Image (cartoon, rainbow, N blue to C red; front, side, top):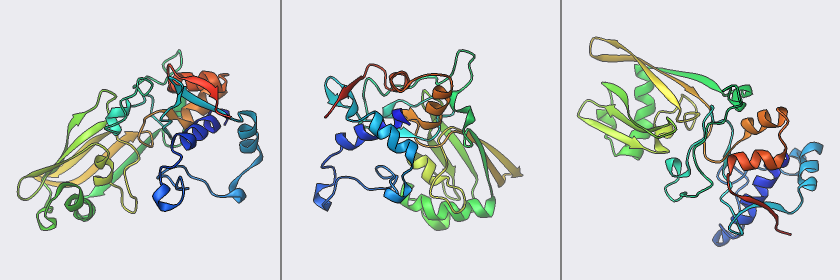
Length: 253
């Protein structure tokens, strides 16, 4: 909680004025930082805020880009794997495991997951996403010939998916991968760490399964990994140094 308080404070200070044209600094949603109002606060969170009062993470004296997310699945992503402009020395991919090779975030309920679609369900979802993300013509999406992972990042995240349509192929890249192959009723796939399993009847795709790990973009601090590290006895400074190597803790006020 102390590590999260410092990261959230750093993000807020780094992004002051970000939305000045709209009359405020940050959205209280996943677009910026989730905040449910005073009614959603609880004693331990207030303790963490008070205990770390004024502390932020810095690089060369300035507040860092303090990204965080739910679950890395055992390895974090470099900044540029997800955000084109996030080439930062402290946003590098790292194995987030203990001395026995066990992921610190293995306690997360989202550490592993499985999603599946029938051909009809997949076609319906892709008719909603591929025209916007890849310029595909909705009428050409079904029958779908296949879905292929055609590029992965250094941290084994999927950064390009290619879809075989009735007329040719289209691809989606980067964060759009999770939006394109979204589960029914959701806005995106949980993470970009996944394998695809196809079931076919002859040349026709009849069923698709995505087996994956983690939740969120993977850049910066893994929240469930931070919980695992805290339970292993690490303090806030140690946790933050692991996820943002080379940064310094300083008081902003």
